[in-house]
Length: 256
View 1: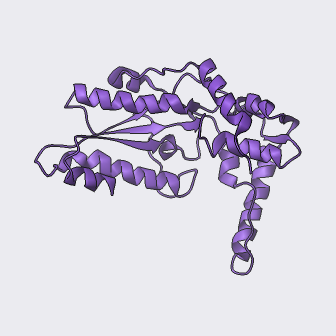
View 2: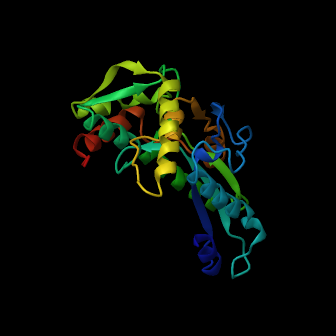
View 3: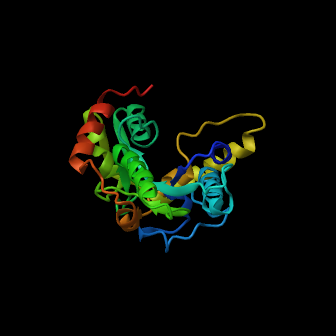
C-alpha cells in the first residue's frame, strides 16, 4: 500500500485524500469542524462501504507518528477531507444529474422540499488545498497527523438549485414540481429489498439508491477555518470562475 511504500522509500511527506463522508451519519451537519464531527460507528455511515474504507486509511495515516521511515526519520502526514467535487473530469456528481435528465426527456425530477443545504467544492480549489498542505508541512516539520476540512467559497445551497445552470447548459431543466422525499425514499428502500431478494435468480439495476436520496435531502456543510489558519489555504478560483470553467466542461461531456 501507499503508506508502506512511503516508509520503505523514505518519502518525507504524505497528504491523504479522504472525504467529508467519513463524518456523515444520519444527522445533519451544519458548519461542522474537525472537533465536533465524530466518525459514526461502522454501521452508521450514511453511505455504505466507501466512507468506512476512507476512515480506515485515515487511521493508518493518523498513527504514522508511531512508525519511522527506513532512514529513521518520521513520515509527515496530513489528511484532507474533500467535499463532493464538481468541475473538470467530474464523472459522478453533476454528471449523475445530467444523465438523469437526459434519460427523462430533459427533465431532472426534484426530490424533497428544497430546504436541505449542501456544500460542493470546485475540483481546482481542492487540488490547491493539497499544494497548501504540502507547503505547510515543508515549512513546519512538526505539523503532522492531523485532519482538515477544505471547503471553498462555492455557495452552500440545495443540490438541485446548484445543478440548474449545468442542466440548462445542455438544454435540460429541473421539474417544476417536487416529489415527496419520504415517498421516494420509502419506495426505493422497498425496491432495494426486492432486488436483494431476487438477486440469486435475477439482477435488478435500480436507477437510484436510497442513501443517495437521503444524502441530497440532508443539510451537510463544513467549516474550513482550521485549514485557513494552519495550512494557509485560500481558494484560488472564485465561485464565478469555477462555474464558468465547469460550464465549459459540462456543456460537451459525453453522457452515454
